[in-house]
Length: 250
Length: 323
Image 1: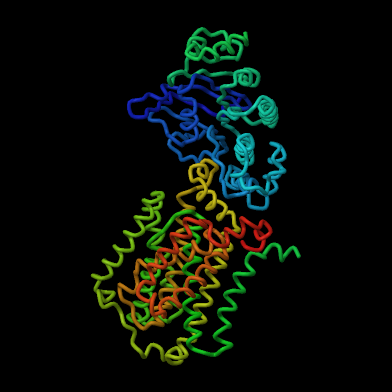
Image 2 (image 1 turned 135 degrees about the vertical axis):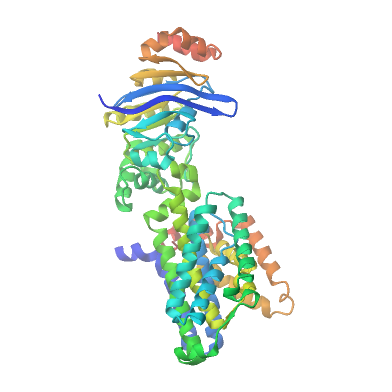
């Protein structure tokens, strides 16, 4: 199995705050890795470190055999890494189609405009936004904006997709839709890391789960073992509802 | 039909410039020609600024620096090195492009108000530098020898030729604007305007895209500068780097509609028309600039997208015609 992404001792500080401590893992191609942890555990920070938004102080990040630790985010994108944002970042004054075309144009396939338009329509159909294609992105509702984030990332035809809480703020039928979409993406052979608070989703979809707490990896393994891990349950006890959900999974 | 759809966005802008060029030719009045030249010059400058302001979302308060600097370089080569007008115009454009490239690499990492402030600083610094630069004549500037015009068929003919070159440059500016707007490069610029961080995550190589946008927005102003000061007969620091002209350019772009091809053209037209009226009116002639200031305020408050932006927003059908 080829290793697509490898993190070695990634450490990130914000002033006195130790946001990530020595995060180390390998991600084989084709896997779905779930990233969970209480609020403020450093999950989004880890994404920001992986795709170059906040380069780490220590450690190395190897993506497709290239050291990308200090590279800018567009370098990652060109190499085939795409992400969605927890707080959606639509290009408001552009149409939905144009938003997705940006992903295709400047992603790792470096498509020209007319090919991008074709890819955009394909991807919009895949995420179910075809009817909105000519609308301005700013006029979408939250669920649609989340789908737009996903569409933009997919249009780049990435090797690795970082999904940051694509389910947050969605109602249960929207969640089911989105989970189906994620599974379909996996069928296309795209490797995924997903940050998620909706446990049912992470546990069903992930091949492997890493748990972060205060910037440290406190557990790693299959969803079943994670659900039984005492450290994990302890980390979530500050949030009784989530602990309960985890225990229900058993 | 398909061709019409494809190029409909460029049709109106080209028609406007063509009409402006033909108006003095048909009426045959030199005064009309001078009015048309002033508008064409504004069209070229505003369309160029729009590439940076409208497409990329970076507010430059000192864009006139490229006009002044290019003008100085061109006039210097014309008078001191005996270059032809054509070569001098090209050299002025190239010089401004290089200046923009160097500046852009330094100040385009600044965002929002900091970038805007830096551009004012650049303009003022350049004015102060030229004021003390003996090669360019220091505070008195460079005056063209009248005999220069003989090469171009005498002064009257030179003015006529300048007018056609001006029209050509205005056309070049709006074609540049149109092709940037409809290109992949332009899509990257729009993405930067909307959300620079998101654009970078999607793979837009933001530093180089911004720098090239800056260069593209500087070249034609540099050429226009050479042409204007050739026509004018001399170039001085306070004529070459007037900060208020920078602000007038912003008003034109904002008035017509930033980020559209037609907007800056209409804005330039409307603003120059208004200005022509104001400077000749007894009441307004001394407070002409405060009217511009007030106008800018009204635009920003009530129609931030400008006239064309407003029309596009209100009438979706317009989107196809008004690129």
